[in-house]
Image (cartoon, rainbow, N blue to C red; front, side, top):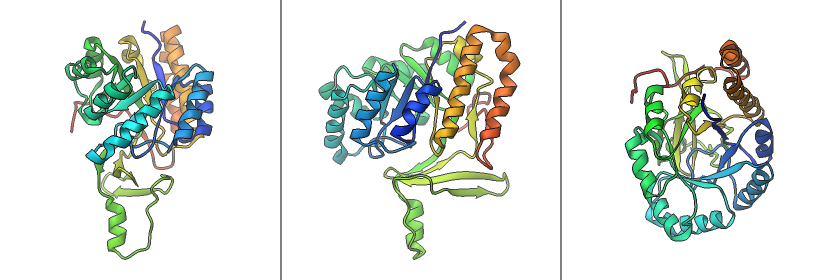
Length: 310
């Protein structure tokens, strides 16, 4: 029997935070586009302060994303932002670039750091390397399978986080490809930089798949045509004591995130108290999630049960 994993969610606004905690979230991940990749919403410094107040009042945690691709000109403002996060007592900073780790040694030496380099976190040896440099958690790549996740957790000297639900990123370019295309076409169409509600898709007729595409300050992002959903396959990771299950809320409404968070919370509690009851109810959870999925957006199990393919 495993321990209870943390449920980590990405709210799209300050107003969503309390609702998601009430639904069962233990932690939230927020931030600003210029420092964090593919956030569900944009959170100013004042928003981060409010988020800390809300999470503290409910015994939850707030993590802030600083995993963007940094250049020399970003370092001073990143250092200043980190000082602010340290003063605000956020619970952890998520990083991919070692520059963030080096800055933290100078300006926030007691800050908890979560290593998340996206697709390259594929083995426990590298996770432990970053652990020895100061990271307390590794966020595993979404392209590795269940066996690799369990093996990584068994050998990890750091906490392990895995995305269990939501869309995943397939492609990123630092260029504003769509905005540049419209400009080239001579079309006066402003690509919204702060709000991802404007839905644009690449359509693959052969597979009948729609790939959401959006742009922000970090460039152009193409997302998966289906959402990961493994609410019915949590046993191995709970038994292995994976520390955190992430439900990604990018391009999702707060109502959707509330319902999904409630179901994962219920499924986890049920498995920990009665494995047979969980086994009996697994299919029901999947069907309930299918019912609330956005139109033309199915669910699958991602790479959890596939050979790892890049």
